[in-house]
Length: 459
Image 1 (cartoon, one colour):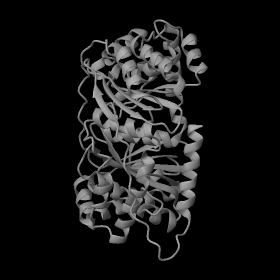
Image 2 (image 1 turned 120 degrees about the vertical axis):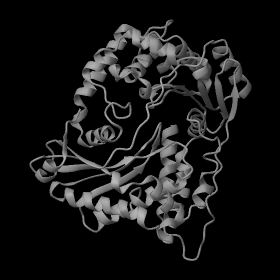
Image 3 (image 1 turned 135 degrees about the horizontal axis):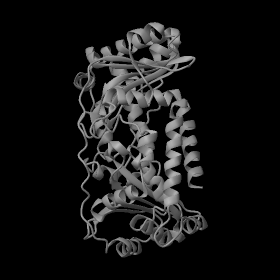
Image 4 (image 1 turned 60 degrees about the vertical axis):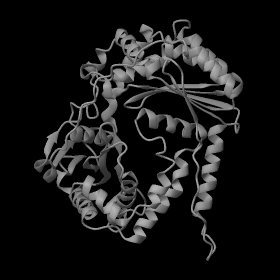
């Protein structure tokens, strides 16, 4: 029901947004106030974010731990993927997997665990009447998971099968291998699991990884929904307050370095060429984030972008072309992607390079900048479609070491961006002379590119 309401609201917004406003009417700038969660810390170090929201009879709980594939050992790449799967399916010390899942299903609740790169999230959504039972089961799974051998084996086999089949999707192959081409295949952000590394993973690895990560000083809890604050806080203290433990000793995240320009080629039978172009991006929290968002919107982040107009609209060389200027720990990726006919691949690469050079040579027009700013501001509200999304986002700011007012000040920061700000950000973070190009396609149809490029293998 919650999802249907959100979809209906989104469709209504899109319909109203597509309507042509009457001539002469001016609408005031969008005003959006992000719901502010209460933050408190238990004596043992557990951080809690809470927000009562009575709109729907639901309670959403999200738990976060620092961890994830960014920290897993190279010789057991895939550990975190197997870990979150076996954690969810392996039951607890007190309940078998079947008994645990039956209780979740009887409440019509949803419980998921995910690896988000440098954090692990456990999410629970339940009816308001069942939140006590749901929170108890969540605490049980967090504190005393069983990682039963059979579930570990199944999680390992599923991951091995995914490794074997991951090159079936060429677009995914291009994006994955581009990360390795930029970060290096030895870095956690460029490394991929192998059949051998996954098969080395054991139940003892699961238990050891859990002991390392699951500690109250590495635990954030966000609770949103139809509950009474005092009762919820009492239950959280009862379930988590007696837990003892120290901060986890996670390995240091390896640094990354900028690599020189290069062109790589992966041979793959395909009707089209799949292109990825870019280089290292930025870390989280750079002060130019609003200017970079505007830059990306103008380059390839919208249907009116320069890349779309030049490559799709004017020349008809691609159905879609896109760009992303992401942030990550320690640094994200600046990447442009599209797929095109094999015979037009070189032309498209040159057009991309030309548009990237343009970013650092001239500021955007005021009209172009204004369109980007208005779109960023008007779409900002859709980043957090529910109160629980907003509360989870505030919790993640703390985990990622970002200022708590990052979202509160975003609209004002976008409004303040000037054309010179965009040009300065481009000259600081965009490097046409370092562009790395990856082409995935048929070596017979792309013989010239294949010959002139560094030959790579899809892993």
